[in-house]
Each structure stands twice: as C-alpha cells, then as structure tokens.
Image (cartoon, rainbow, N blue to C red):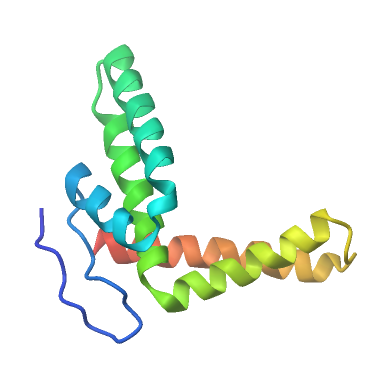
Length: 123
C-alpha cells in the first residue's frame, strides 16, 4: 500500500489517507464525522458478505468506496462540485424546478466527480 500523500494543494483539508480501515476511519472523523456510523454499518455489512462469499472482494469494494467518498470530502473542489449537483437534484425532487437539462448536467457532474475521486485514490 502506498503511503499517504502529502498535502499538495491548498484545497485539500487533510492528506489522502492510506486505504486501510483505520486510516479511512481517522480521515472520516476529520472531514465528515457525521458519517462514522454509516461507515461502521457498511463495514459490518462488507465483512458479513465477505464471510458469506468466502471472498475479500466485498471488503476491497468497501475500502474503495470509502476512499472515494473521503477523497470528495477532503478536497474542496470535488466537495463543492458534488454538493452543487446534489442541490440541483434535491430542488428537482422537491419540484422547485422542472429543468431536465439541469438535472442531466447535475447527474453528469456527479458521475464526473465520482470518477475523478476514484482515479485519484487508484493513483
């Protein structure tokens, strides 16, 4: 596993953590502590699936998802883009606008942010 990266740009709240459960939990506690219970619940589910499937794949997937989500939370640029797109979708869901083109742009932006975060944590 590669060491955690240095803080390379001013829009990074914390350095990128290693992709281990402990490092990810510590990072999440700093950038999105309100999600710690969700992290624990999904980790328990991943370990249960790993046992049932006799495979490490569910644990590896869990680590990747949380590394991605922490990448978004720790980088201001990604977090703001993601939150803005989610806001557009939330307003549409509340029927506060009916701009389907804006919804499509928001969905594309969410996909782009998720992909950029995945690429970043894959190195």
